[in-house]
Length: 455
Image 1 (cartoon, rainbow, N blue to C red):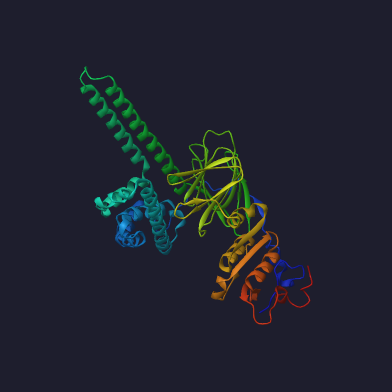
Image 2: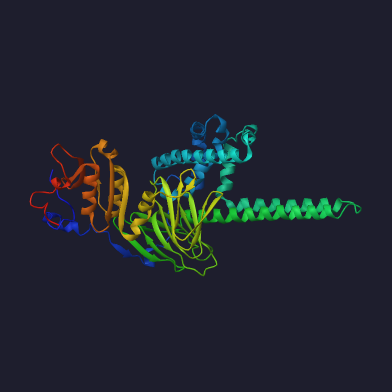
């Protein structure tokens, strides 16, 4: 196995052309990089008719799977879990390319939604006592027709809003009739109280409908085929300025989605990966970042977000200013220097120093991670734009760590060699890490003779 370090000044001449690509460039991405042409969705969820067919086909089996995650005490929530999984798949349909991708997505989302449901029930039980869980058994679970109706209302929020407004009008009408039927000798306090309660109910219903409609509108706009996308390839970070003057630095291997209505009806984006946002102030519309299962809302501040699809958590940090992180019905405020981790079940907590380093150090052009070798190699491939393999499966579980500058792959590889007890080299044209053989006592052993002393 021929061995050399990419980036070594005395490296093999045949690798000199490739060496120039090992630095992670930061490039400017202008507005022309964003295509305004509506895209077409060719995946398994290309239209609503296909969605309905798949939903009806897999509803029973996914409900059974959800019951396994929920346990007997919460099994009645299985249809709700499946509805949520399909709703999320519909929102993310543009990134689901094949039937196999959809199957894997649904299984993972059923697991996540079941975990959220259990977390929600646990919180309700804690607040309301043991009786809070019994009501779920009193109501029969919806069949596939009812579940499809529920899902249809979720993906068409304008219908839900109209229903809420109609219900509000009904409440007002009923309250007016009730007040009209009251006899004059009655105390003036009764009609006044009824009016106050009626107004509160109506106002609450309208507020909920408005909030629900706004959230659904953002979700649908970001999932629309008319949304624009901007991607930074592996080994590259990009900078751009949005139409509202917000400045964005996009991390390697990341994708930014902007709705067609950006800076007109809404200021919302979705990031799949890592991004630093310097939000332009002075705009009446709040700026919203969708990342994983979280939404980050700010008016004028700096926000760092990491939410790659394979990340176990979403990480948010606010170096300057203030922002609000929303997960379902939970909200947490962040201000100067504060950070938050959002787990897949919706739990929010402070990040560990290691988690914070992984999520934010790239903004100062460093790669920092201490996990298993499989995770560390994924980070190296992403941030340095290489494709290193680990042929020995057992080696993937070894602990490894890196804290290296983005413009020095050589330093990063040496750190992996030392921390994971592996050797870097080439097998043909393929970069690999292999477990060290007997006699390999240091990382320097992997450098060909005559090159170990080179700096």
